[in-house]
Length: 149
Image 1 (spheres, rainbow, N blue to C red):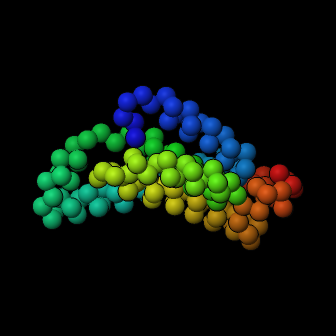
Image 2 (cartoon, helix red, strand yellow; image 1 turned 45 degrees about the horizontal axis):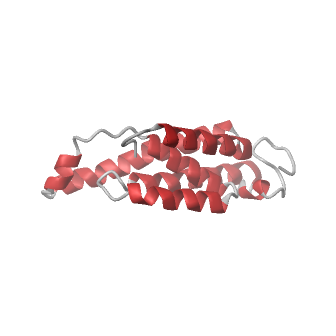
């Protein structure tokens, strides 16, 4: 998704990252984006590799395209935002990523979203026995252990 001007994508990523860090904490955000970025790339590259092995010329041509991963950090952050309770913002961001998900690297976007959301859910369950999302609605602890975010 870095085609053209990257500034709006980077600005949106920064804004969404700030929100997730406030809702779930910096460690959870870092975990979400690392798992989302690396995990989605590994899965997408495996799909691409299988397609190449099966003789897809389109997949082989796409394998030489650059893949910067900024959009996967955004996707994972939006997934984390969704899992933190900001469902509408997360879904709208996910829907806006979909038009950029129609090429060989495209599966990275929805995969990074899901992985980012899973990390937040797992982090909440490990900390308090329930998802972080309750904190986003003001019911219970936030990621730092404070009440009523």
